Length: 122
Image (cartoon, rainbow, N blue to C red; front, side, top):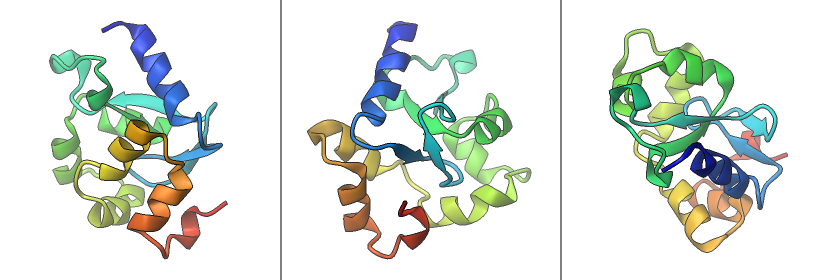
């Protein structure tokens, strides 16, 4: 896959929502603030397949560096801003897969999984 797949991934994620949460800390990001992170880093053989990509804030993307998703969660240097979010959402996001699969809006999918998500509501 090419770098164009990264651009298409980001476009798809923002097609139905003005803001999308960072996978690692949960901060809501606009299209201009969001970066695309590789769950399995390219430096370690990861590719640009949609399943390997996620939205991250620039700070989390830099902090994660070349760690895998699992290594980052278990890291002793895991930033405080990420600890609570990853404790609540420790697994690969089913929400992300569903929103991309059937075009359901993020808001509707997140309400199904976490109806008390007041901090995410715009």
